[in-house]
Image 1 (spheres, rainbow, N blue to C red):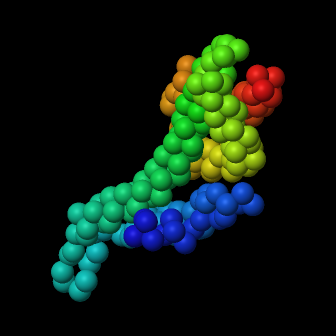
Image 2 (cartoon, one colour; image 1 turned 180 degrees about the vertical axis):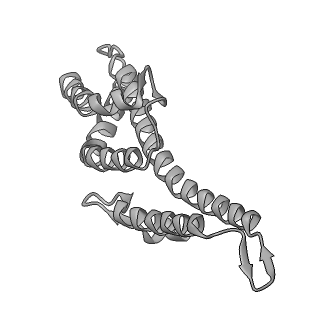
Image 3 (spheres, rainbow, N blue to C red; image 1 turned 60 degrees about the horizontal axis):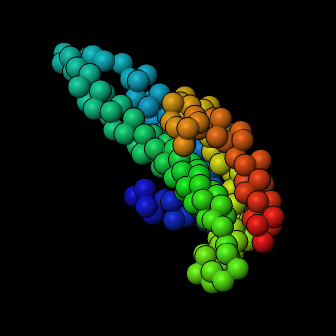
Length: 181
């Protein structure tokens, strides 16, 4: 069900990236949180004529299921943010190492490796810049839902610190690429 939902809750960006539609995720989370509130409001035990029914075990089971669904949607968003940022960090580190390679006058192989790094950065320039705002919005949504992501580390930094500095770090990587070229 999550896979079907994610397929239908995606937004295509101008560069063709598929990103989660946060409005659809929030709507789905509102539905499950509403159900959870509705379940918690049910009175137990209930007297039906001469019979007293304790629905507490069913009530707890239903709350557990709604929590699992809420977790499924929030963990998808959380994993999306972490995966994108981790991938970007790894790409920038690889590019930094690749651009640091010395290219000798007669070293065609080193020139090809450096040029492939430059090509890779140029291909990812716009798609990467396009990611910053949606990832910040997803992090804000998760934070509003009470999902703490600040304990996650990307490289040597916390996720929050990395997200704050990633636009300038990306711009520095792009500048380094043009300087090396």
